[in-house]
Amino acid sequence: MSEDWFWKTEPKKVIAMLDEKRNIDKEKSKLNAYYVACMMVGKNPDEKDNGTAGIDYPVTEDMLKGFF
Image (cartoon, rainbow, N blue to C red):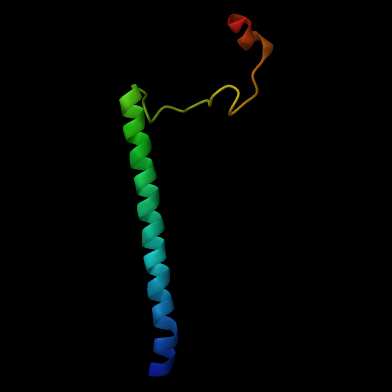
């Protein structure tokens, strides 16, 4: 391996590693924010969330009966 090859490839590897570290830190931050938000509203973050009616799945007529 030549020195020329080293300087052509090594900075790209370092930049890719830094980008990957940044993405991992961003995901950790999102998970931490989700955990804190769950704790503040009294929800267990480990329980499976079925979603929100009207956002994650359609609202049925039976769900709307109590509003009118």
